[in-house]
Length: 368
Image (cartoon, rainbow, N blue to C red; front, side, top):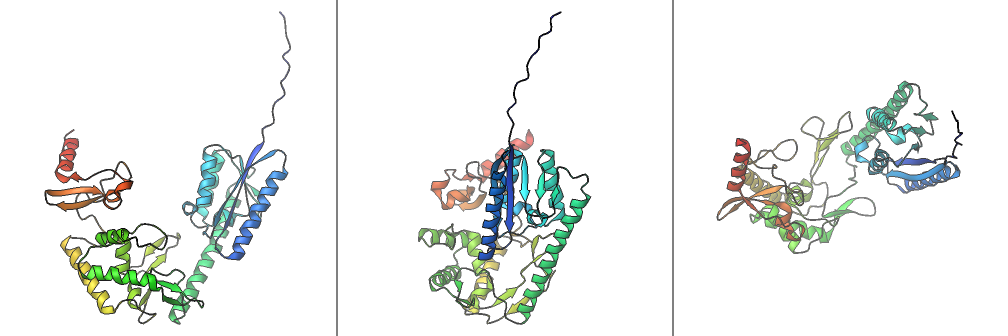
């Protein structure tokens, strides 16, 4: 028997691919400087280690830490982890990573399933060498408790400002802007558009047709997007255009989810809160026309938008652009058409489908 020695081959030492996550909850200049400092700190820290490979700094700016799915930077980090591009994560603290205990534990467990530990710098906690989740659960629940306390303090402060008549809206609707003191004043260019929208509505023009007219006229939206029927509807039903203001239209529950306030929380109404763009009588007349239109089409208000008014409402999805189909009454009968194609033909080539054809196809499927 002959025995031959096989020499060991030198193995290439694989570098640990390390990424960092940063977050600041407001978009103030001080917070921007803080975010820039964090990004530089983690980049230099990672590159300082010869056995580490820099895998990027992911961040969220001006975003609350209570909801993981609302943070694009965190979601981008998770995607890179899921496809195997990251081995280790650094972050400042548990509260920066997540202020929701359930989210924090869920994310840590998912990342550990990919064999990706997280190092929380402030707490000096490495999930890779953590013997129990108990300490993480305690610390993350403390972070959530801190967030809840801050939220309650903000709510209390806003409530007192509303009651004292000194509350100022951080975001103003189309047609208004802030003056140098932060007060609500009319934006003359946008106000002319608002007047046109109400004039169209008083003449019986529907919201989708108004949106189409604005698009054809090249009227810009505030964010450079497209005018839609729902955007026009939100303008026509906003009391701020006749100078009033309703506060606390929505509320946040204990899970940090926002809901329409249907009486679950106190609301406040202020007349002559600011300068009006249209008269109250015009606004009320438009509301009557909207209600008549809703009654004719058997539209029933729900907690979100509207319940289905027709059997196929919300069920037909365009295979080309993903938009939902809208019901149309034509001279030859009822048809359903892609919303994108109706308003922007160059973006979607799918044409209308006769309702009878849809019913026939549905019957065939049901029979099968």
